Length: 337
Ligand SMILES: [Mn+2]
Image 1 (cartoon, helix red, strand yellow):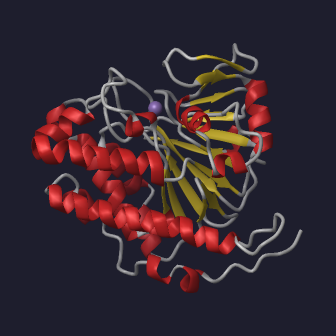
Image 2 (cartoon, protein in one colour):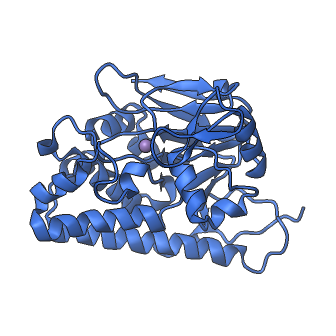
Image 3 (cartoon, rainbow, N blue to C red):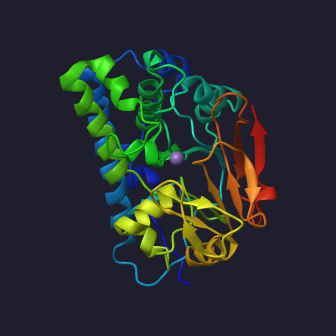
């Protein structure tokens, strides 16, 4: 293996970094208070950033033959895969479904902003499903969660990774627990509402990474293992089927490889399928959201994280010391809140 010399971040990503202190109070206050044109400006900025991120990763990879050894130099994006180095700490958040207070709580108790402002290498990995299933549509919780994560991404692009969930990309009316289209209609009206919803939908369906490959052995997606993935390249450049499976699939100990799903999209995957998938992407454990539970499954190779309150559901986030290799889900620190 040849050692790669990646350009230093300040050279490769000078346009992408932000030096002002991260202000969580301001982010929470602004979430949901923007009008349609202000939301469009936020989306313009995030869209530009996501395109730059992909381009920076492509430029870095070009001219390099074979599979080199990565140097630790922060988060970087390769097609639809975000990579995290073996340095620093990652906070992983599961489904938040229109509950800005749950995301805020995770950020407060982990002291995410303070630690970033203090110069610590810390990452926020968000596993999707930001909208729908609100307690009340009138609270506009989906809009608030989305504005919070877009704002965080713009303020600290190198430290925030946003993955898509099925609720974030689904076409209107395809699932019966969908309330976000109504929410934006009520908030922005019949012209701007659907247009904003479509901009968010396209951002999640076309621009954000689908998965995070942690150099320490964790692979994170919203749904799970995909039968179509034979190498990491299949996630970097996904087919429509790969995309759907990574976002919709669920673990199922009763299934050996892949079986039908109750969801009408994607499949259930068993232990053998997950083992094969993790081998293909050169990882040891899967961390995913998509279900309302916190659970270690499939012989400690699959961790499901739920981060929202809904009735008496258990909610938690994970804290990962990126310097330490992870071989089993039990090695991942789970904090209930
Ligand atoms: Mn989901």
